[in-house]
Image (tube, rainbow, N blue to C red; front, side, top):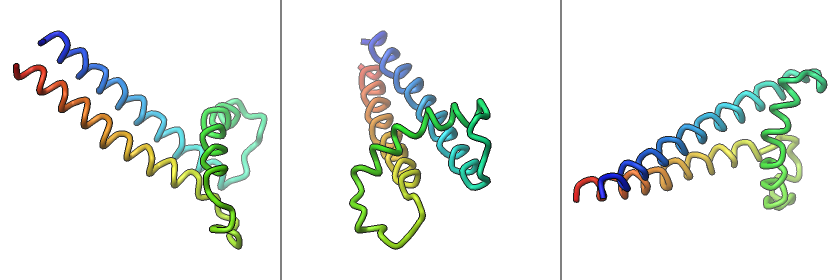
Length: 104
């Protein structure tokens, strides 16, 4: 059981690392969107390709009547909240599973 415990712990750490990286990418994309960047810049294109599919899905799920009069895009905020929930619960559950496997 020790090997399986370390395997689950490693998966939890790797998944947590990728969630942290994606959170950083979303934050940079939000900050860059405030300054009207050059759309042909490779960094801007990468950020757009990495975040826009997720933002688009979140925008489809949010009823437009809620934010009818605002021009603020709340999809990055919702993505941040979802990433925090994912990291807190999923990574926490994986770590607890790994700890229970390692204690046997």
